[in-house]
Image (cartoon, rainbow over all chains, first blue to last red):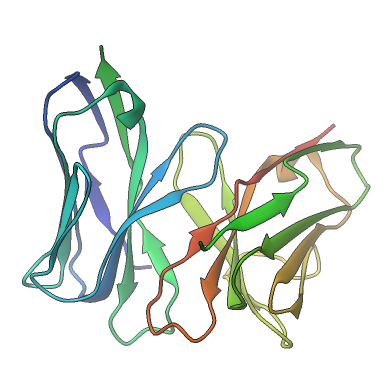
Length: 112
Length: 117
């Protein structure tokens, strides 16, 4: 099936540092979504992207829909301890029925 | 807005029994609801897509007779795990897409931890 390659798999950073993660695919997507999941909880939608080249911010988070429509990245600036969690990208394939394809997640650890 | 609840948040049941999990959209109507399964340290695996008033569409490899899905209204979908076995123990998460929206945003419930003994 279709796959999203999400990297890095995990990150260990110091509080205050900036973070960057991305998702890539060989397929074209119409929508990119970024979620955060805390342990034992459901994913929470952070940012939704709908157009190639779109750059959207949500507080310290910024995400972009790649020009080729095959990738997206998420940046977190000035990380804080509560940023800890697993971040998932999800995409809706062009020409598909609408189901999302999820990346395998990036586990973020922040050292105070 | 766009809040989804799940009940129960956790359940322990004996092998051979059935368990029902409810998924509700609290402040919006959901034409489509999704059921996922998540194993520890892994991503979400889509089990089935349910549309209000019609039969659910199951992903390949998911037994429809074992995982019964009913989407009876625009705010409620249920997943029943029938004749549960220990290998069915997992974290089950539902999501919902608001009706009438042109986007594919999915809003997730908090999940249900199922343990089959």
